[in-house]
Length: 265
Image (cartoon, rainbow, N blue to C red; front, side, top):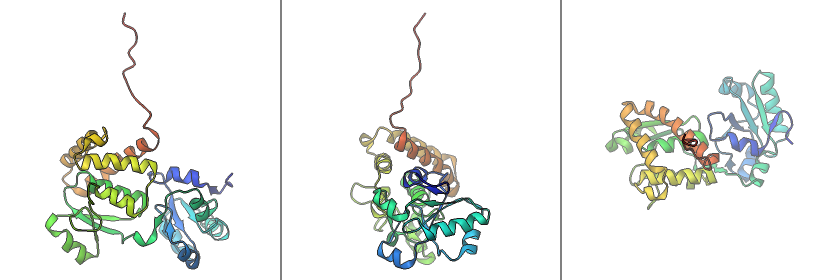
C-alpha cells in the first residue's frame, strides 16, 4: 500500500498517456542510470540536487519523482518540492518496481531532441505520432509542418528529426505505418497502445478490414484537416481525438450503445 505521498506503478500507468498525467522526473544518479538506461514513458531526467531550477521548470505543475528504488533521493526531492508549495509524489519502489511489474520502459538512447519536422497538411500518422511523443516520450516536444520538398532541408538546418517522410528512420516500414515504427523503437508495446496502433495503421494505409474503427478515424481526420488551415491548430484539436481513442482502447472496448427501445404500445 503506497504511503500518503507515494503513487504505485499500477496507479501511475493509469495516468500516463492522459492529459491528467503529472510531470515525471527521474532523479537517478548517473551511475545507476548508466546500468539501466531506460525511462518510464514520459519521464525526463533531472539532477536531484538542483531543486531551485526544478521548481522553476515545474512552474506550479504536480510531479512524480522517480529514482532507482523510490527511497532517499526521490523522497528528499519530493519533500523539498512540497516545501516550495508544489504537489509532489514519489513512485513507490522506483524504477526497480516499475521494471518488476513489466510495464513499458523507453530506451533513453532512442529519444531524439525536442524538435520534429514533417510534411504539412497532416491527416492521420502526422497527428497520431505527435500525440504519442507528447503523451509517452517528451511532453515538451515541438512539431514543424513544412512543404514535403523542404522537410529534409529544414531538418538539417534546424537540427530537427524528420518523421513520416520516405527514406527516413522514423517512417513507414513495409506494411507498418510510422506510428508502428515509434511503438517499436520506443518499446511502447502495451495492450492499449497495440490496439490503437492497429486502428491507426488501418486508417492510414486504407486497410479498414484490420479494424472497423478505421473508417471513423479517417472521417474525423479528413474533417479536421478541412476545419483548420493552420497545422498547429489542427494538431492541438487532434490531441483530444487521440486522447479519446486511447481511453477507448484502454478500458472502453467492451462498451456498446443502442437505442433503448421499449415495447411498442
